[in-house]
Length: 112
Length: 108
Image (cartoon, rainbow over all chains, first blue to last red; front, side, top):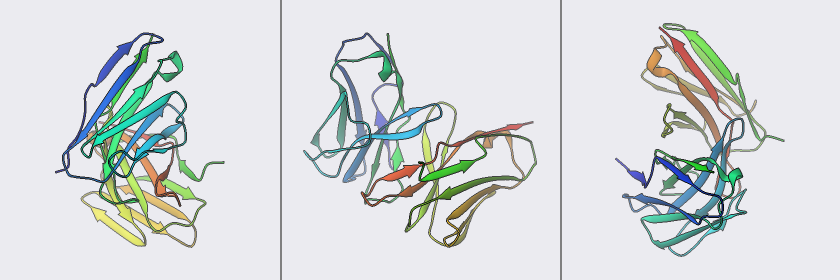
């Protein structure tokens, strides 16, 4: 079974801090994705990557950056955390585009 | 404008009831996905279908490509079916449009 592991289930940070969310997958998937999920808005794509060192902006990239130095690891970075970035963050991976994605358990991030 | 619309947004059912969740979409697609998210966050893929019907245990998914509509049915519902069910369709950018989800609560 594919395993997508997110580094934290719950995280509390302060406004202005630099925040790192880590995601690791163990199935050699090419494609990795970062989403945020908010009540009433559903899943929204922040960034995705289709190869090492490659990244593409999703629908809501402002205030975020990503890093993919190794195939199995995709990091989401909040450069200067703000309270409107309080949300559930979900990482996913897939072997091919438009194929079922495998999700991590999510990180519930609170920015105070 | 939402490319994917789900109904209902919330659904409460008694254990044993037959449940239907609907998904309508406005874009041309190659396949449609149904996802399940349990309390606590993790999301799993239930079905990917491009025509007709698929069945897995008590879950049945149908799709009508001409009408741009899909349904997810749960037979003999159980409290462990309580979850958020999400419909998703791929877009031309090789990502997905997601519905906002249907929150299902099955009461014993």
